[in-house]
Image (cartoon, rainbow, N blue to C red; front, side, top):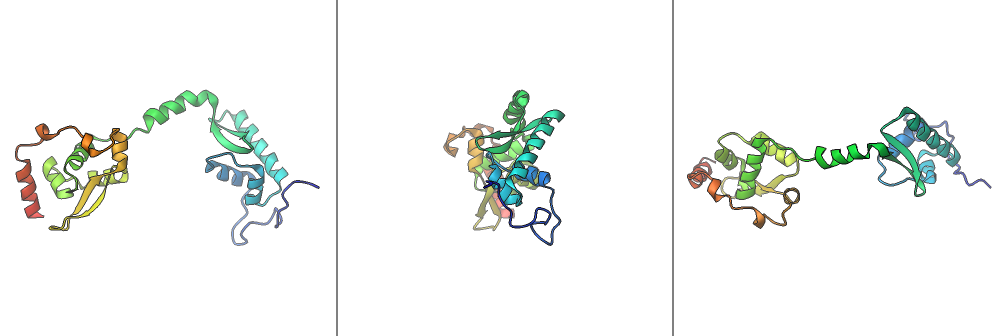
Length: 203
């Protein structure tokens, strides 16, 4: 008795009658691209509803094709399944990219805005803009998108949205809590409190 998976539908039929059939090699590539661990041939056969033997054959064809073309990635059979890996001779480049290329690089304006929020949180956009002397709406949106700043409710008096730093900010800064922030008082303008009072009044 064959141990191959027997599909419930014909290999020529699409999984959904209303959608066009997807070629097996295309389907396997799409599935394996999102896999974070080796995927067994049997599972791939179940998902694609194709015989296990056919799936195994196409996987080996893809692996050989990638090697022949000298791609930067490989399809390997390991730990009972299949998964994409970067080529071994590209390891140094990949490591450099992960270590350096993915560092969050902020502009000077973003760094200044982040510093104001970190030290004065929770703080409104108006107050941040007052300290920096320029409109900071766009910069704050960028910081929010990067996960460094988040909404912290609204000001009870003015209704303005307040912002604070996130746990990711602490992680990137290598700090356990905001108590580890260095003293910023020497770098603040002498009229900082007056600026805040004026902005609170205008808001």
